[in-house]
Length: 266
Image (cartoon, rainbow, N blue to C red; front, side):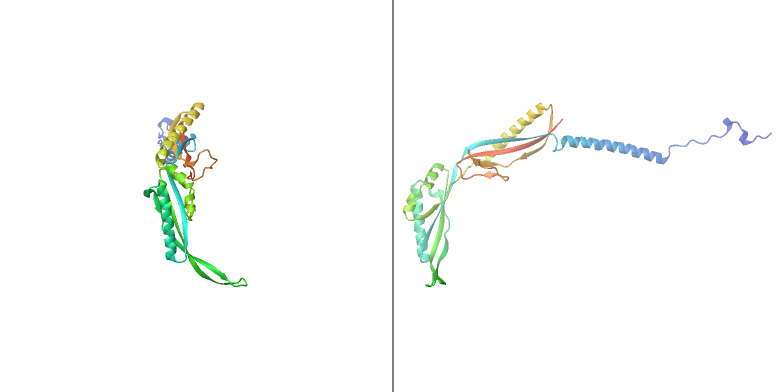
């Protein structure tokens, strides 16, 4: 008797084939794993950024200053002469320049320390008025000539004394105007380097104190910034300038510099 296919025992029936993991599921798995890896990398990046960002860690500012005395002086003076004609005016200022040169040389200034500027000239006009006080015109009355002299010397005491006493020149009927001396230091670059080193050492000392007090461990230097130099008069209330101060009016000066360090911590 023929048996119906449907009546065969369950064990003899053909089983359906097993299917593998579908492609959409594989893609979803890959995407999920990739997202986890990316998040891990991103998280590590944030940690490292926070750890080594210049806005984190410990930031300190060290400073250093020193007093010093100027070793170079620059003194300037100016004088003028008048003449009714250019020739007379030039002769007059030439005579004045010679008197000034002799005065300075006699007081110990060498020719190498002297420098005379070129002569400038201007016309002197006189305005004319009538009896009613009305302006009627003007006429050329003569010529005014101007010249300056500069003394540059490393003998600060000598030039300082001369600049404070020009009585002899005034008594010679010379219209001489003396400017205040300017004081400089010829070893300023060396001084600056020493101050930078001292300011850096000071910043590191402060950094270590803060780290010890907070149980932090310094990792690596993130940034270092050098402040501007401030050169002011000693024992004065001179204010610091944003762009740096450079005093030339005082013989005795004080130089100051700052260094800012930023370290990452563990």
